[in-house]
Length: 107
Length: 120
Image 1: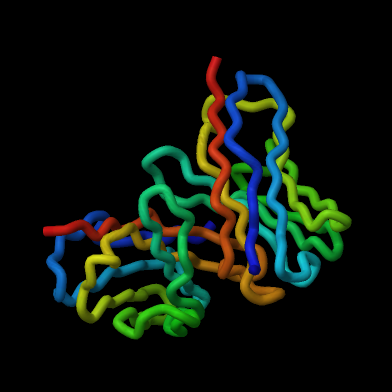
Image 2: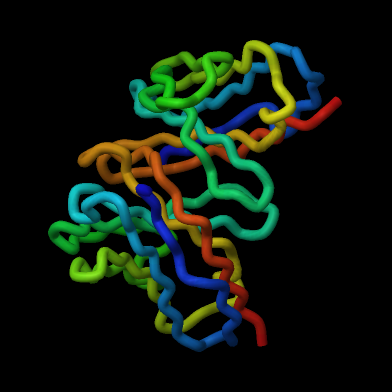
């Protein structure tokens, strides 16, 4: 199994801050990576797929990059609506695994 | 509206059976795979398994194989997740989710979730 490790597990930030979350894979996964945002009591929402492609309707302050084993999600200017938990997800045809999540909380 | 609508919350005892459902609407169910994702209280997301509704072919994550069954009723655009014998550790929120593109496995549409509580 491929293990996905996110860091940090919790991040305290203020509105307007630039925020970066890291996701590392236990083995190379090319660019088969997605990012999701989840708010309390809600289902996750797709933000990014194929490591860097922005899902339709997602604000452009979200961006992502990486390939192989190291990936990042960046929020260029944190907005009040962005306080949530973020998950990376590795996918290929038959194997799917999620990172442990990064909670972005108000500083 | 394109959506996945899940069945309501359930409270069960260990050893009981359960089937929860996920109905797709606003799109053709058989054109997209459906996965189930588990989230235990206060924990992260865990992929359980998926089904290709067009062929009823399913595969499961290694920790769930043999404990759950995913099935589909194409006539009512509904996918099911079933347990024959629940355990306390099955207590969780369960989400059905649509694979965004056939043959890939990231998820662009999620159900609202079904909370399952297993307690004696």
